[in-house]
Length: 151
Image 1 (cartoon, helix red, strand yellow):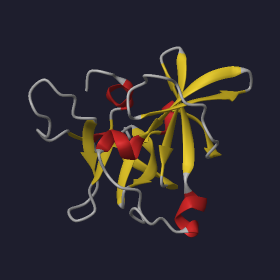
Image 2 (image 1 turned 180 degrees about the vertical axis):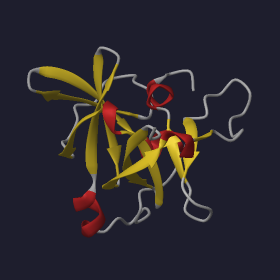
Image 3 (image 1 turned 180 degrees about the horizontal axis):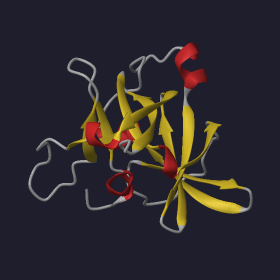
């Protein structure tokens, strides 16, 4: 019997590679200018309208506390690669801003390892697990913790 395979979408955020479960991804779009929401958390860029539905937009770089891939003086090549990854979280859709989406990888479910102890007490770690070979590890993002206000 073959082991179950998981498909992961590889995202580039602040010069690092992260993964999310491809099952959560609805679409990958060029970045649209979101409408700001007054008094929203700092990581919430605003909202956009997609096919008649208002979707909140979370900047993953701000959420993780990292600079965009090219740093503060971002060049146009990096800005052109930026994407909004629209994901389904329960009944709602959320757009996640990332530096780039590079590929989809397939890994055996057993290759996913539990998250390291990275969170401070009372804080969400934003990481579900780790996958990859030594020197090429990718952290699996916890999308629900990225949108939680108490993190």
